[in-house]
Length: 477
Image (spheres, rainbow, N blue to C red):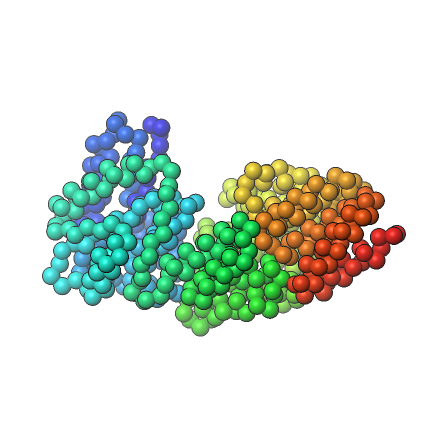
């Protein structure tokens, strides 16, 4: 591993620690030089200056850089820093950076491995600094150091860098219980959300729902949207719409920054609920609004843009405007290919395959579907996996190959149950019934159609009920 990339350290500090920031950078450079040839581990220090200009709230771009970092050093002396305009009410950018890193520390899939807080001696530190230090002392939530001067800072940081070499391998994620100066339970809400999503993924829908509901009650837009996604998948569309509206209210009221990816996601989430309610024209309007909130030059915003373009294309397709649908699908695919997001390309291929089905180009649609199914095999289950399997089954039915479609529909059903998507489960049951019907296996077709009818009835989905009943009415045909 002689060519191993350096581990990234994000340095968070208010503006009054210029000398200390220089000392940190010098210390890291000295450590790298000292260990060169003796260790494969090296470090690089990054901070807010690595973030280029953006039309959205600057702190959001800084937070994304933290999300790509392995460690965070937070230093405080006299000044607490300036207010960053956060939806959580953080009162300084350094505080938001610290809590962003704490959230990343609790996520197993993120690189953040450890956080080190240093309090540099000063005769009159800001009240917020005193309170943070007292809270850390009471809770023993994480390691912090008292630092007399620059010389001691370099000595203690050298010890920390040596200890961090042992954390260069696999991550052990940790949840830390700490309150920001706003008093809002940021970490508890985020941890409840992560727990709820994981429980749902593991098939524990009731326990997951309880955690997501509590997270939404004490959290912000992210938690509201997570709860809305669960409600929508479970067929509780009125409740899901209300949850998305609460998320939107954070932005329309001025509590959060309107021109942001998160605001766009809130509008798009509500559009998704509207589509499931059969209100496709209203959904198109919401999605077009969402696109106006995104910075075309921002990399993360482009990923969000692609997801919104997907939804916009689907809504146009539902209204039989196939030209507009294709235009949006192809724009999303072009962005994804340019960015090298291979798995994200699968979503574009699924959408284009459905468009080819509508146009009667079944062989092309089958090729798209098979490519997606094979690309996703062996990756963690998501709605995209289930949708790809459903698509593959539907194409086989149209190609008069229903027996080949049955395994795809069965996998889709299993996936949707695993991720607790009631809406997806209903669709999978319908397609499975259609496969059995077309294959002449009428008893099995009736069994799946009745299960589909039951799920749609429980969700109050009249359209789904009618489709399931149609199969039951035509089994003798």
